[in-house]
Length: 240
Image 1 (cartoon, rainbow, N blue to C red):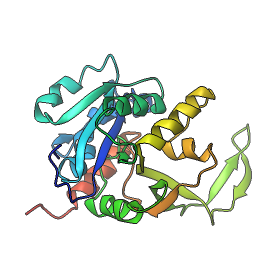
Image 2: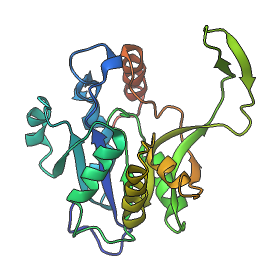
Image 3: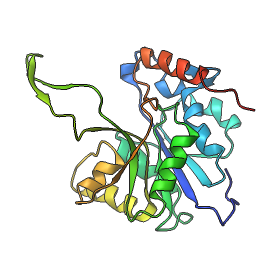
Image 4: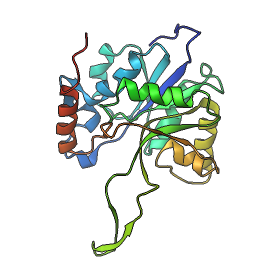
């Protein structure tokens, strides 16, 4: 990753919201800093982008009171930081501000969760190749495989949902810099908090593209997810 990336290559900027406390993880250390196969989760999450010549720069949005990033910073000198907010959208917007003056209006931005350590280069490349000429952008996602139940207030089944058209949203999500800033600003103005970047565009009447990715691109939420991620990473072929 370098600001001097080959100009003939498609260029993108990486934004990584990492200001969450990970309360559901059940550990005083936020999940993005949990140890995983010799690294932290966030180092694994960054790796597919830091090794990619198309990535012009990476910005991680961390909490104002973050007490862990400084230990990683010497190992990640190319990664810039922004002060994250209470909501994901606030953190993403803060990181986008750091890119102001460098990112062009129509430059691509990839937003990836700090708690997704199992993204493969193949999925990264598929997303970029599918969306490089798209007018809007989109996200990695996987068709819903499980039967879904809607719960009643007493934790009984209210109904079974038709899963035929349901997809599980993953990251990265890929949108152009200017429109992404505008979509997030519009949500803030309307006092809305999008669950992801795609939803901010949906509220504007847009239809982000779905690019099928691997279900192994899991998000660390609890200790069992960490064990699964360890098994997935350990099963990968060794790097040459």
